[in-house]
Amino acid sequence: MPGKVLAFRHIPFEHLGRISDSLGARQIEYECVDLFAGAPLPDISDAAGLIFMGGPMSANDDLPYIRRELDLIQKAVSLGTPILGVCLGAQLIAKALGARVYRNRAKEIGWYPVYWTDAGRAEWRLSEPETVFHWHGETFDLPAGAELLAYSDLCRHQAYRVGKNILGLQFHLEVTPEMIADWLTQDANCGDVREVESPIDSNANAAHLEALAGQVFGGWCEIVRASMPATRSIK
Image (cartoon, rainbow, N blue to C red; front, side, top):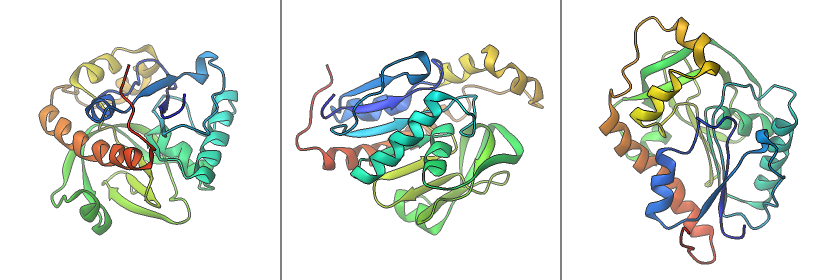
């Protein structure tokens, strides 16, 4: 796996989505690692980067693959490996870095605006709030040394960066309309869907979200490229 980005999924339907577009545009090779399904623990020593995706479980669950991923994040931090976390993935990074993960004051499911801090505006050259897709019931404290990049009305910690190469996003920029429509039908999500007060339009803000995803994930992919000895092509 030398030179590859390793993407850790927690359930099949929460996959890379738009993240794969940004990786592909830069010819960064990647491989999905499904520890939850019994995949062997990879050696991350030569990994170009690690991505931790979302899922309906909690970072606090006493599950073997969750414990292994927390250990991998700590090792990756010590190696200086670029890390990206989305939703559960952002919570796992926070927990691995010593922060608390806990129930948010309200579930945030559907399209809601996020607002940028001064650091977030500088990071992504954004000024106005952006309506993005959310699906979470837990939140986290910021890890030591983290810089808050975005917040929402229902959840204070929506995006953060630790150093130059660790990025955590509570919201879902990776989703396509097809992914959202699929999530709404999944048995694992049926309890959350019943709590949503109004129907979710999977196509809402799709074009704008795609552009924003390219900007945010593209920036992280550039960090990955800069850390690689040579760019490798996707097979």
